Image 1: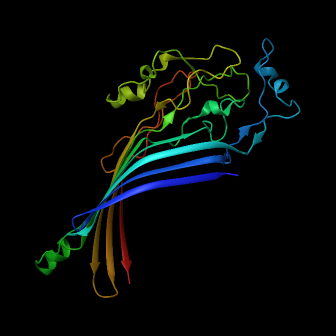
Image 2 (image 1 turned 90 degrees about the vertical axis):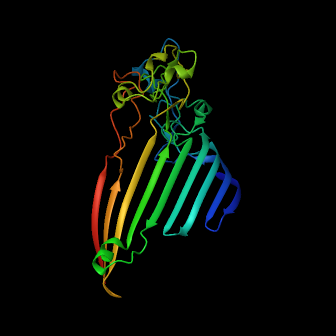
Image 3 (image 1 turned 120 degrees about the vertical axis):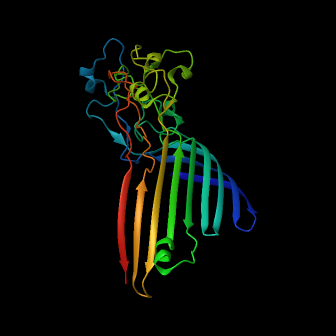
Length: 315
């Protein structure tokens, strides 16, 4: 049976009449977690490596039970651990302005496989204990609302200048982790998730300078020359799970709202919304298989700037 234990400690301080600051430590631990996440299931009938008699063609004959093919099992087999420092500052509405900002510095570790509950090594799931696929080391959010003050001008000018509201949401986070695959089945397990061998002296050799041009980043996001296809038969690769980090994320959404009230019943609202206001390029994860000639390259990105306008009549 899955068990989740949570704990936290929060310190809160009011600053002035409108500001509140909070600092919190939050943690949780998952025990006997189910692998039935995103349809994942661990392989319960992998092929065994037999020295001198293992080929891709005899995978079925080498399975633990050759009378069955690949067997997925959903079980409460896994564990997770999360710890975070959370900082929060907020300002309640004052002088037509309110703001909320929070930052989290965290670490999430689990022993799930790279695809839900499918472990790289079905004989030793603990080999996959590392940063979670969803682990984001740092996250920052900022949101603000500003309402224009009421200008005491003529009716026509006041109708244009008054009753505006500007909103903004800014999100920045570090990248998600990933591992480097061999692109082969040297373990002869029939699963196909063997990781590459690490042949460098330090994992820092795999990381390249992120402060390069976009053209350089998409051509080589990480250094694949410090990895090699697994050569030792019956092994699952010497590099660890999720040892590298993908591109970070930055996004700003901005909105303008205009409210007009003609009488107690009839009103009109105009909205202009700008998603990814600065048209920032948020890259996808790089190709991480050594079997591909494009290993280390990036081929995708998030949504570009999008504008949306709307009118709403209430009566």
